[in-house]
Length: 253
Image 1 (cartoon, rainbow, N blue to C red):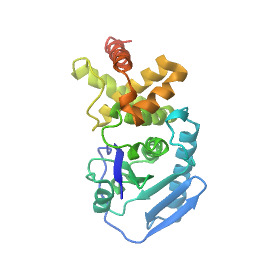
Image 2 (cartoon, helix red, strand yellow):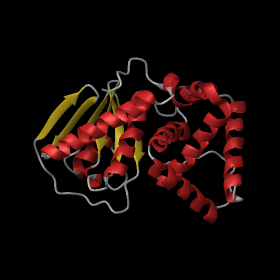
Image 3 (cartoon, helix red, strand yellow):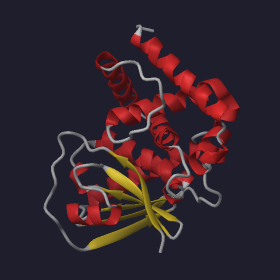
Image 4 (spheres, rainbow, N blue to C red):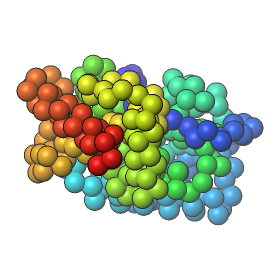
């Protein structure tokens, strides 16, 4: 059985881990499925709506080349019953991620950390869109070392920011704050652990989209699924766009 994960979106700072519960129930719609324990009818309906909106957003995103052939436009979501189940399903500590996309035998599934259930609707919607991109592109199923992390996470965050002004505003501020306390980097993001790391990865992908136009989708598809096919010249070009944009923002552009 193959197992992998990708897309661990960091948790919001105010999150707390709820008490464990039992008895997960599943709900399926044309947009995917929800498996969760002891949700009220109102909360289950709200989650079903979030899944629908995330699926619609990802379906509408201009990432055709990067989408896994055969993806049906559905998102299968599991809300872990407790911190231990989240860690077991994703191999990620409960204090490290809001959600993660896993891959088992070629099938992708979004596992939500119960710690974020009180995070607020905008955060939850943005998280589902981010993870939905990982599902659509099957990036969790790509063997380790075969993809460029900044492209994988940057594309997911770019689609999420494009659908949610609060995510876009937060990520912009994170980049500005980073530049205020760090020297201008000369490399593309390599460490992808914090919200700031994700914001920087988004900026890199946004520059690919800006400068490559219609060719951006093909480039990102290779960067996510076959990194070896990204040439040194292409990598250097993206790096130069990324650094130039950071310099512009640092200088008040």
